[in-house]
Length: 137
Image 1 (cartoon, rainbow, N blue to C red):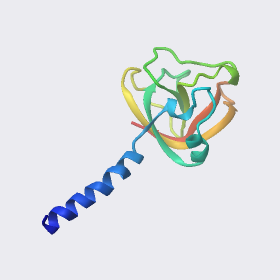
Image 2 (image 1 turned 135 degrees about the vertical axis):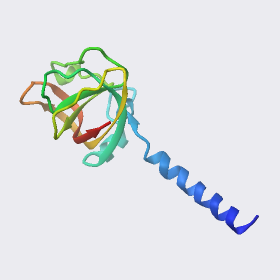
Image 3 (image 1 turned 90 degrees about the vertical axis):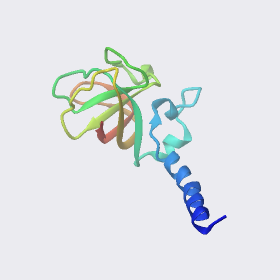
């Protein structure tokens, strides 16, 4: 094996795992089968993480948040209480007004992971998991 071939092969071997760790998560990766929060999610609180999914239609115009869903939804999955929180959605809070993306178009979102019950003071929307300071595209 020539030196150049070896070095190229070695570089690829180390690059692939790094890329895999950087790939976006799915919302379902936040939850265990019994509905509890995964250890990965607990360990990632306060860190900047990426998820992929679909933007549910915003609850109101000029909002600075939206709901990321596991699959396309034509209406927002609004929850009354934390007890009703489904395990396939996540609240996404941005610093800017959200520009809606058609609900069947997949997006990636990056933000700071937060866990624990939170009631949005403007809408009353209750979330158990959310990203803050988020960007999407």
